[in-house]
Amino acid sequence: MVRVHHKFVIIDGEGQHPVIFTGSPNLSGNSLHKNDENLLEITDCPRLGRMYFAEFHRLYEHYRARAADRRREAGEPGTFELTKDAKWAKKYFIPGSPEEKSRKAMAGT
Image 1 (cartoon, helix red, strand yellow):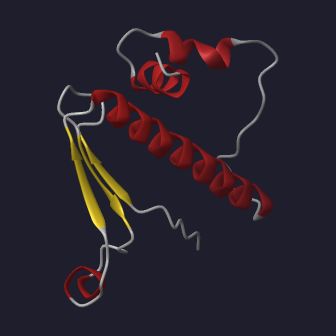
Image 2 (cartoon, rainbow, N blue to C red):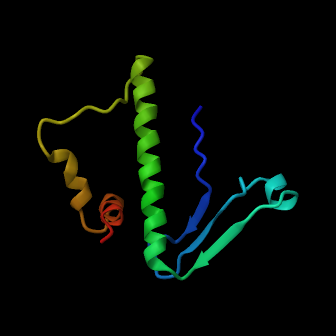
Protein backbone atom coordinates (compact mmCIF):
# COMPACT_ATOMS: atom_id res chain seq x y z
CA MET A 1 0.00 0.00 0.00
CA VAL A 2 1.24 3.46 -0.91
CA ARG A 3 0.24 6.47 1.14
CA VAL A 4 0.69 9.95 -0.21
CA HIS A 5 0.37 12.72 2.36
CA HIS A 6 -0.31 15.52 -0.09
CA LYS A 7 -3.59 17.21 0.72
CA PHE A 8 -5.08 19.11 -2.16
CA VAL A 9 -8.04 18.98 -4.47
CA ILE A 10 -7.94 20.74 -7.81
CA ILE A 11 -10.93 21.40 -10.03
CA ASP A 12 -10.41 22.52 -13.63
CA GLY A 13 -6.66 22.88 -13.14
CA GLU A 14 -6.09 23.70 -16.80
CA GLY A 15 -8.96 26.17 -17.13
CA GLN A 16 -9.20 29.91 -16.64
CA HIS A 17 -11.13 29.56 -13.36
CA PRO A 18 -9.54 26.71 -11.38
CA VAL A 19 -10.52 25.97 -7.80
CA ILE A 20 -7.88 24.61 -5.43
CA PHE A 21 -8.44 23.34 -1.90
CA THR A 22 -5.31 22.83 0.17
CA GLY A 23 -4.36 22.84 3.82
CA SER A 24 -3.95 20.71 6.91
CA PRO A 25 -7.09 18.50 6.97
CA ASN A 26 -6.97 14.92 5.75
CA LEU A 27 -10.39 15.56 4.16
CA SER A 28 -12.03 13.01 6.44
CA GLY A 29 -15.19 13.49 8.47
CA ASN A 30 -13.31 14.02 11.74
CA SER A 31 -10.79 16.44 10.29
CA LEU A 32 -13.49 18.49 8.58
CA HIS A 33 -16.04 18.56 11.41
CA LYS A 34 -14.24 17.96 14.73
CA ASN A 35 -10.61 19.02 14.42
CA ASP A 36 -9.15 22.51 14.32
CA GLU A 37 -7.82 22.49 10.75
CA ASN A 38 -6.95 25.09 8.13
CA LEU A 39 -8.28 24.75 4.60
CA LEU A 40 -7.68 27.29 1.85
CA GLU A 41 -9.91 27.73 -1.17
CA ILE A 42 -7.96 29.39 -3.98
CA THR A 43 -9.98 30.52 -7.00
CA ASP A 44 -9.41 32.17 -10.36
CA CYS A 45 -5.62 31.79 -10.47
CA PRO A 46 -4.83 29.89 -13.70
CA ARG A 47 -1.07 29.94 -13.10
CA LEU A 48 -1.42 28.30 -9.68
CA GLY A 49 -4.02 25.89 -11.08
CA ARG A 50 -1.51 24.72 -13.69
CA MET A 51 1.16 24.30 -10.99
CA TYR A 52 -1.08 22.12 -8.82
CA PHE A 53 -2.18 20.18 -11.91
CA ALA A 54 1.47 19.56 -12.81
CA GLU A 55 2.20 18.40 -9.24
CA PHE A 56 -0.73 15.99 -9.44
CA HIS A 57 0.69 14.52 -12.67
CA ARG A 58 4.18 14.30 -11.18
CA LEU A 59 2.88 12.36 -8.18
CA TYR A 60 0.68 10.13 -10.30
CA GLU A 61 3.51 9.18 -12.67
CA HIS A 62 5.94 8.63 -9.80
CA TYR A 63 3.67 6.18 -8.01
CA ARG A 64 2.54 4.53 -11.26
CA ALA A 65 6.18 3.74 -11.98
CA ARG A 66 6.68 2.36 -8.47
CA ALA A 67 3.61 0.13 -8.88
CA ALA A 68 5.03 -1.20 -12.15
CA ASP A 69 8.32 -1.98 -10.37
CA ARG A 70 6.43 -3.99 -7.74
CA ARG A 71 4.57 -5.91 -10.47
CA ARG A 72 7.88 -6.71 -12.16
CA GLU A 73 9.38 -7.92 -8.87
CA ALA A 74 6.36 -10.20 -8.44
CA GLY A 75 6.93 -11.63 -11.93
CA GLU A 76 3.83 -9.99 -13.38
CA PRO A 77 3.73 -8.35 -16.82
CA GLY A 78 3.20 -4.67 -17.46
CA THR A 79 6.58 -3.28 -16.47
CA PHE A 80 8.33 -0.31 -18.02
CA GLU A 81 11.13 -0.84 -20.48
CA LEU A 82 13.42 1.77 -21.99
CA THR A 83 13.21 2.16 -25.75
CA LYS A 84 16.30 2.34 -27.94
CA ASP A 85 15.12 5.55 -29.62
CA ALA A 86 13.00 8.61 -28.83
CA LYS A 87 9.66 7.13 -29.96
CA TRP A 88 8.48 7.08 -26.34
CA ALA A 89 8.40 10.90 -26.39
CA LYS A 90 6.08 11.31 -29.40
CA LYS A 91 2.89 11.28 -27.32
CA TYR A 92 4.16 14.30 -25.36
CA PHE A 93 4.12 16.41 -28.53
CA ILE A 94 0.67 15.53 -29.91
CA PRO A 95 -1.29 18.80 -29.79
CA GLY A 96 -4.09 18.70 -27.23
CA SER A 97 -3.11 15.32 -25.77
CA PRO A 98 -3.05 14.85 -21.98
CA GLU A 99 0.66 14.11 -22.25
CA GLU A 100 1.34 17.38 -24.08
CA LYS A 101 -0.65 19.30 -21.46
CA SER A 102 1.29 17.58 -18.69
CA ARG A 103 4.62 18.34 -20.39
CA LYS A 104 3.75 21.99 -20.77
CA ALA A 105 2.45 22.25 -17.21
CA MET A 106 5.64 20.71 -15.81
CA ALA A 107 7.73 23.11 -17.91
CA GLY A 108 5.64 26.09 -16.80
CA THR A 109 4.64 27.06 -20.34
